[in-house]
Image (tube, rainbow, N blue to C red; front, side):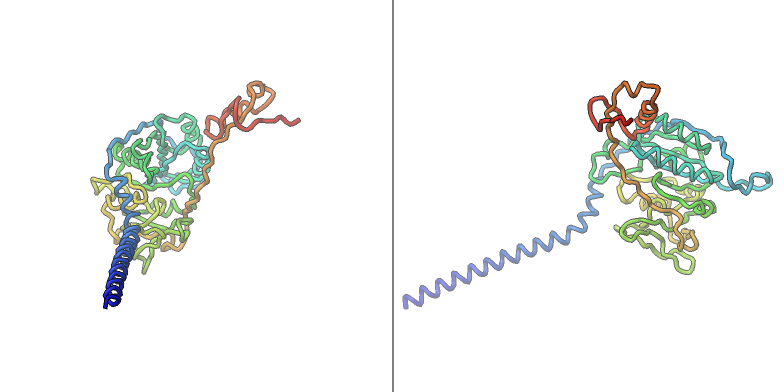
Length: 355
């Protein structure tokens, strides 16, 4: 009898331990599943948390502006016929920032835009002061241009998700608004993108908002509207992220008259959602979209990003830099002005003269 009582007590204790163990395991499984289910939403919530406070402290300085077109255009449909109304002006907005590759990329883009008539180039640089070297470079192309210094507010530079290029584009929108530009076509073109000249003749006829494919975007290597029976029916993009308009910045153009109908046009400091929020702010509807590029079957713009490298330090003596018999002094000082490299007498890669 005593043995049976002890046995039953031990068995009951064992069952109690097993039951408690099962409860602990169940709680752990529930916690893990909850964590996994929240991970996907946490990624998008990060953006909202990062930008829950949005200070309106934009600053911009107009560095230089030229309204004179000194180019010898390869083509123009209205050069010799004063009776024909000039074509709509394309306001081509390029955000840029100081880096080793900046001058090279602005040179490449400028020599593309030199072929486009009736274009005003707005170059907004992420600096607090005007860059004279950049301004002299822009002047060489002969394109009517506006050069703006538009630094990103310091508040956003330390964020996990940095909204690059937003301050620049907001400055361009402010310039358009302040100068009462109500006709023409707005297009955002980065300095590291590649453009087919056909793109400009396509977007010039934009009535409201035109859209077209952009190559080399995301995991699909393409971001494009989906066109059915000549109308935009949806979007093909590898990062939808609950965006109403999952398109790339280079994948649309906007008619200024249409944009002027919306008084609260803006581009918020919200990384990854700049295009979506801008298109929402102009009140875009699906039926307003005009597919270009042969019903979005051609790629006329490519998102060719250049790999950024840190400017090297070149260790070289003052004797060589000042020696008029060598070209190095003039050349290396120019490279330093461009931000391509830095000259040092005490550190960096040592220059070795070869005979």
